[in-house]
Length: 465
Image (cartoon, rainbow, N blue to C red):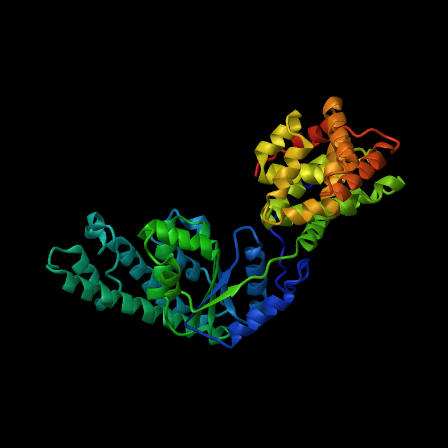
């Protein structure tokens, strides 16, 4: 049973093997852009959280590695507990795998040793109370770094100008040593540009996000290093405001750090849902239900209604994934010869993700079909659903499956009265469609119980977001 998807596998030799969302053209374009750009350069891939940026980044990384680029992947959110982002960035570079031996390998190690030591000094520089320990273990470095470290640790620095000069020496050394490492890439049969992917910046602590961008701007602005930042710019702007106050022009501030922005196009919902069905093993489950003719359309009906509702309620890809997780739980409770009622299941699963309060009222039997349709109607794209075939089907199923027979009778009576009222013309066609659809559903060879359907979805709803 598959209730949680692992990160989509991106085979190193075949980045697009599992490319169900047709990301290939976009990745090819971005790879070409990087090839023509070189560095120093910062490219930002902008898209809201939960829209598949990480998978796109991993595909782009694998594609560039096929072109013999040295690439590093850095998940900022996983290390935002570190006081200074510089430590985590340098740690990533230190783990770079290059197929070199002999003098080249020794040279790279020597340069990285100095980079690490300068990183330690610069990071500790921000903690005044720890200044006395800055000279520990640096006596094996060249005199330039040793003198600077000693000045930081001692009491001889009498003004901020002198302090600034000493720090400038260290930062210049950091850049020159890191540049020397990157110049060794061709000796390892790599392209001359190091591509550094930084993912999930927007999920970090606001102070960490801003400090990370500051470090990239001021310490990694060297030839032949290119950063690809995966982020939600709107969220990052909110982080900027959290650090510097609401009066800052966040968009203008962030332009200091980013040379080029690329907005990742939104994935088509139905295409994504089809890919989730494959990964959750749902295609095989639904295939076992086709022996009963009336059940053979359940799969497509669910996908159609779920996709329509997910778009109307602006569900992120991650939210959609959680919804399909719940569907998998529902399917495991539904025997192959039992009706699924895909319209109701799709509605309930989506409402659980987007409006838990209304979902709870429906499961308790407190919410009416009118409550649900009013909620859908008020959505930004809800009027289109409400007035179209999907809206008629949803409302008809809600009324036909209502276990409160008095309420059900009253709703049907209101629709009939509306149709027969000669003075009212508005919405008569929709009322007539509803009555016809309710009759069609009710005349089927079964009774639909909303409470029976909702109990299965309610159990699946205990799977947390």
